Image (cartoon, rainbow, N blue to C red; front, side, top):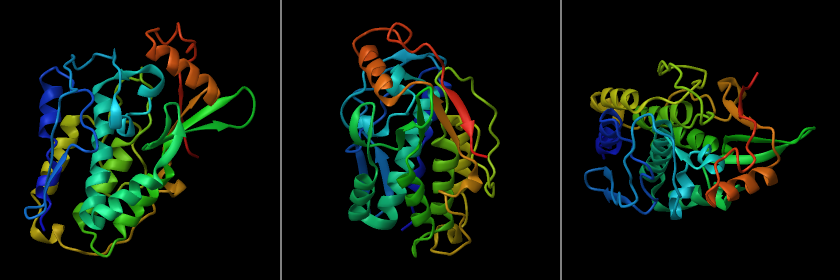
Length: 278
């Protein structure tokens, strides 16, 4: 089965290039799967809204979309092109899981991701944990179960160069921690890199990389083996986001922002800090 249809990120790219941001992309029930053709498409854009490419706007997140929400939206309820790239990375991990492990593997992956964060217990792609010491702090990072799943898929007996690279892009170039007010940092994609990126790819970069992937020869899509550095290894030097607030404090801030207050009015006085593993 050739999964070339899996990587149709063109619509997201066009929405960003057209000075519009597609927010609240999809819920996890909005995937159309054609198993004969190996095509997975996105559907149901009923909650979408248009903004400028530079806009950062409060917007209520609904339903199962919370499972895919970029972590910075939890305490600021903001959306940006970078948040959309996070969402797409989540979907790529779901797609790769479905492709190699089928619906049972997908359901297991959902169950393994369940964690308690600012919005209750949900199968999130990021975790919020209270760090030790004083003053209190909350550490936001990629869910460890997502990293383990990427490793499991890369070592799967049906894994291909395509699925391994898809996991690499999703985890190391899309599911990257950032502060909401952070300006886009330059990111250079490297297929054989041993470091996670300092920022997320732009949608234009992702589209170019994926176009090059689907233009590869047939061997690229055939089962094969290759050395795999576990994604949970500290060698990747993955950035995390730290806030000088306890988890309970951030939960209260998030609740107040959802009620209509601006983040500073809700008590978010200090910006988050990006920390890279040493």
